[in-house]
Image (cartoon, rainbow, N blue to C red; front, side, top):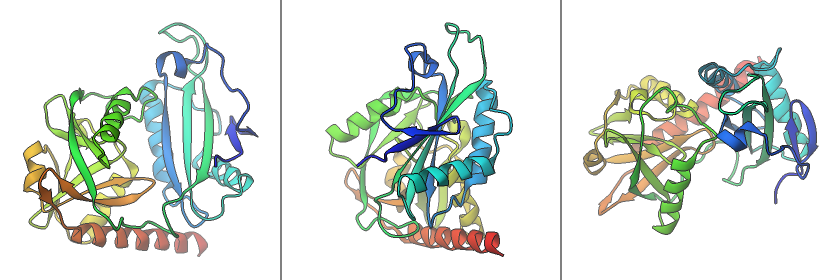
Amino acid sequence: MSAGFISINNQIISRETPLFTVGNRSFRYGDGFFESMRITGADLPFIKNHFQRIVDTAATLELLLPHGFTADQLKENVLQLAEKNGIKGEGRARVNLYRNDGGLYAPIDNSCSIVIDVTAYEGGGLGYELNSRGLKIELYQKIKKPCNALSIIKSCNSLLYVLAGKFKTEQELDESVILNDKHNVCEFTSSNLFIVINGVLYTPSIAEGCIDGVMRKVILELASKARINVYETELKPNDLIRADEIFLTNAIQGVQWIGAYKTKRYFNKVSKILVDALNEHVAALKLQKES
């Protein structure tokens, strides 16, 4: 059941309240972006990372963030909304930012509005959990993702991901692998992609057009601390077959391992190591805040 309240520009209103007119630029042009965050243990452990990505994306899109908008204010708004919706412990927040009305393609105002939606997370218990069943994946080859400055952004124009998601559903898959315009492996529909070959971790570099995910950065840091060699590089579709292990990362689920691609079956040894390291890292962050 959907939560009862959302927030728009720091005002909590009913989820049923109409928000936009036909002049809304996100509706007309996809002129905006979003950020997804996990609430775990009634906290937002990676709020600083998410906020920095919001700041960086706004700069790329030449959006003016509201005066006084800070990571602490965003965290307060999200947790307040979670409490208003009766969400205790685990939840997911989606923060949408869009340029305010006016103009055709060329805007007349670069100020933006911020909508926050918080719902319960039904993934399991407290913290990040590794999936018990490996996921099934396949390549989505109909449309390739371009590599440019907009590729790393979670834009409100998500048609590629919509079509890749439709393909996933029609093929009875758990995830679709998106390729870039160089025909290299880029990412999943809602996650970054990692593979393990002979104990070494590989992931597409940002130059390959993948989303610059918060959890991607966290996992890269945790892998390095665990003395796992990591390379951000080009990956070919054939590298998926060569891999001993494949897993995805995103801010909501953390780490999820892949069980099958075509006729290949995979292990989840490194995935288990990293999800344990992730939960330990979150616990350490909480202790730091409390001390």
